Image 1 (spheres, rainbow, N blue to C red):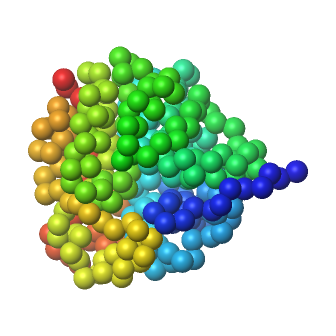
Image 2: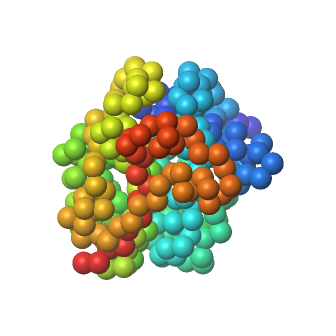
Image 3: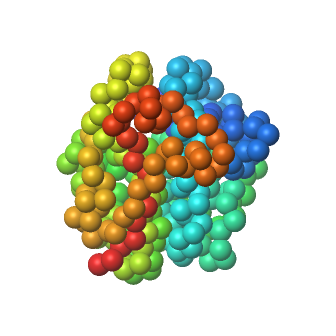
Length: 276
């Protein structure tokens, strides 16, 4: 018998449903860039993402490409600990072929974690690694919550911060990066997404910002040089342009990331290794 699910995601947590919907749609592609058999069920449990269809139309292909990018970054890192910040409805613990002994921590708001756990239970999902949900607010002392959940800062870690930084004020983003760096031993890796100011100010993004504002999910920050930004926290980083990522996977360049259409506007997809 199905349990009664907690309230579906609301507010900024609705963005998690948006991303899951894009991943579910990708499963119908003739040559999907990844497999995510749980995405459709999670979206159904959340009541669909039709309220964000306009955003998905604009950026859905980018969400798909960045999913594959971050999948590849995590698997190539092969660290014994993985931490997914603002995990939302992410299902990497269930769908990626993790090396034996991998422990994966998922951090997100308590109400979203509770909803997701109920939905995964009803989907009979079984993780492919040790998976530890960590309910917490990233604006609070999430580092202590992570350590209390069993995270060991002396073990190499692969960190993922997908679709997070633009929603944070600059000081909050720097604070998160400070603690990620402080908890990272030498050789840990980091993969993240951010945008520059020109991207935030694109006319094409106005409708997106209006919809996100209604969800209390306003974009609050940007960065002009992610390599320099990460270096200031002890990381050696490189950036992959979404247009190059699309070419690598023989996909059309999403209009929202096509330099011919957006000029100097950039979505940064960065990977880094901790050298301190």
